[in-house]
Amino acid sequence: METEKVKCLIIGSGPAGYTAAIYAARANLSPVLYEGLQPGGQLTTTTDIENFPGYPEGISGTQMMEDLRKQAERFGADLRFGVATAADLSKSPYKITIDEEKVIEAQTIIIATGAAAKYLGLEDEKKYAGMGVSACATCDGFFYRKKVVAVVGGGDTACEEASYLAGLASKVYLIVRKPFLRASKIMQERVMNNEKIEVLFEHNAVGLYGDNGVEGVHLVKRMGESDEQRYDLAIDGFFLAIGHKPNSDIFKPYVDTDETGYILTEPGTPRTKVPGVFAAGDVADPHYRQAITAAATGCMAAIEAERFLLN
Ligand code: NDP
Image (cartoon, rainbow, N blue to C red; front, side, top):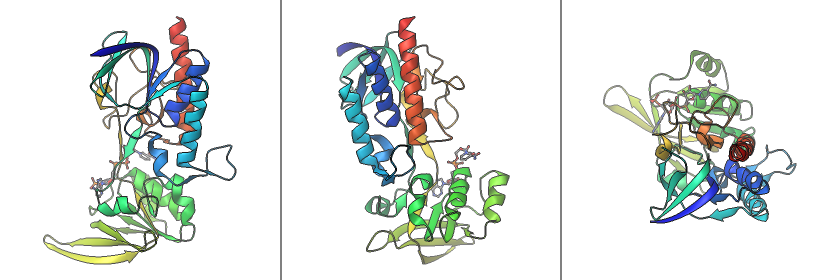
């Protein structure tokens, strides 16, 4: 298999990956970045980003990622299409296989592979993507001021998203498949005590409808052991909060992860337990998951890589 040696390999092309590339390129690390399955990452699936400092008018997710990409290119980062399909971090130089056809031998690696929000798997989620379907209340909630929205899920994320949306929307339905919430007690109480939130227990969303974006959801309510009731509920926005999956599978044999797969780093740093291997952005962040926090940890990872190479 073809082999190439690089000083700094960045895997992933969200805000963390591109920011790492900008910093690493400016530090003369000649970084090579592989963009992965979804160039630009999760932000390319949202509509406008209005909470990234420096854009008073907001900016579209695709435009922001295009700008970050250009900025990394301007300083000489080598940006390539390709997906990391295997990793060997057992000894330095670390080996990453790209598309099962090429091996990169890297002195330092910045893992910025992100996380993917889980979806229910309905055809309608794709049909209405960016037109009423969202997996991020902090990103898109603002567009539903005084409107009616539904959140799917019964965990802490769902309760947090529902509470956040209740501050904006006129009504929030929380669609929960079980007869109880899985969320922590305090989050459950917050939801139950919020008069704008109505919890629909033992409900499943099975489809969406609407001519101009989402106008409603098809629901199935479980009634006892074998009976069910189907009905439609008018909503303007449909939010998924059924968990995220960090894209860390190929690194798991070498770095520590939590039970969901988020890469564990030394607190306050992007350092994994493998010297010279850093994790930035959502792949190591179950808590904040924002573009600005991902960019910040990408910057930190590049600075760490630079220092590591100096030693
Ligand atoms: P969780 O895995 O905790 O919860 C996922 C929820 O989605 C569950 O209620 C689950 O239902 C439901 N769900 C999953 N798949 C489907 C499906 N196909 N159809 C319908 N419902 C589905 O994920 P979270 O993202 O909520 O939380 C992840 C971790 O992060 C947790 O440890 C959580 O405590 C933590 N967290 C903490 C916060 C805080 O402390 N402020 C905030 C956010 C997250 P079921 O119960 O039936 O499996």
